[in-house]
Image (cartoon, rainbow, N blue to C red; front, side, top):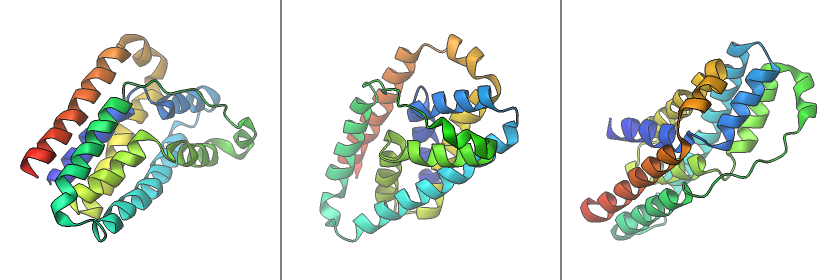
Length: 185
């Protein structure tokens, strides 16, 4: 259960203010089919994070167990610091919009998550907990917790959440997880 809860919390917090939240806002502004957008986000995240968790599990086979706490803890700390670096807005391929809300959300979210903080965090969480199913379920739920409200009430939420507070809190959480991993393994 630790793998599920840690993955949910870590990903939900890391996702706040991320470029994929801005993408969710863009999709919600473009399409009225909220359910189709959410379904696209869900499937894209599930597939992307399953691949990430698989990579984390695979890495477990090659890293000596003695090194786990230090490597994983160090990556958590680096992820925490990475959260303080603002995302750069990337151009959106608007041609995809002609395929509708579901396909647009599916393709754009899958691409946006490649090498993103939450994807890297999912790899690390899978390596740390060695529980593929719970990490994938937790990280996917975390993405939905962060993005579904944006689909429904994005503009209203983004005006009321101080991003610097969120980024510093998320940074502290990841650094705390890193230190705890190094100290208690």
